[in-house]
Length: 199
Image (tube, rainbow, N blue to C red; front, top):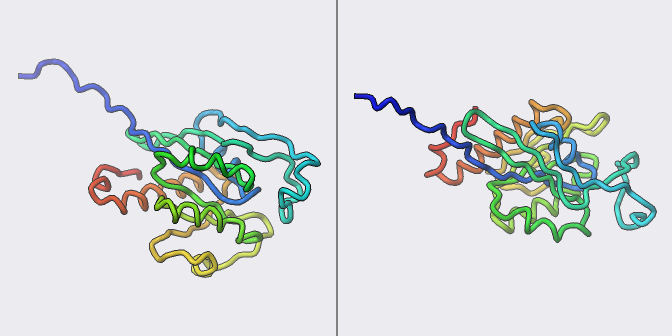
């Protein structure tokens, strides 16, 4: 006989993800595009003090920079609450990374084909930590287009690392990248993989 009590609603499973990459690659843009809340940003205006410190080649029009992190949130389905943390791009702010990376399921490394070498530090960082990551090539207007296999080879990535194209300005494109990351991260944890269905 039914008791008349319904099961309590399931709380969303909280998943922490990082959005990383070089300076000016689109991390703040991506967090802002996909977040369902107004994103928290810690951007400061670039000043004369950054001359000779921050490499602006290829992103000369950039006037601000993230100094701590970007934060956004997105819900996928009824179960999963994704907390997105965009990392600062410049080397002088990398001391923040260890704190941001603690407890993260995985990371997106954004790449710009005009400055592909700028994402090497992010790739190295997550490889050293053993953090699952995907590489998302942000399609900037006028940037050279390369085959994804060429990008994988240039970054010396293992065959298991997904590489995909994205437009950091578009919500759906960003969501596809995050879904790919979650699936990749859970594929490395077989017991947990049965729990997740993000589509």
